[in-house]
Image (cartoon, rainbow, N blue to C red):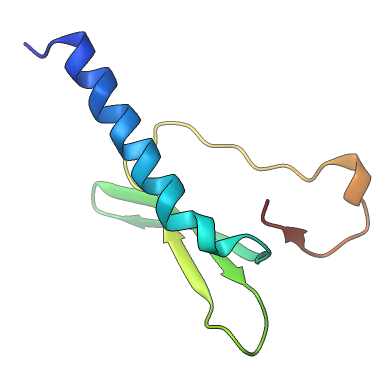
Length: 84
């Protein structure tokens, strides 16, 4: 059995590592969200685009049990969303 404090610490470490990896992507736009279903590895993939001078980035989220995507009313009519 796993100690809850160890699980919480591992989760915090994963979140901190993810934040560190994603930090350079500030200013990128979400250009595509897709869902891939392969055997037992169902995962949404988010494609980020900054422009022609930088390569696109694909983020694959595996192990999710629930995800939702919506467009806020303040960007109604827009075709892309800026990554925070």
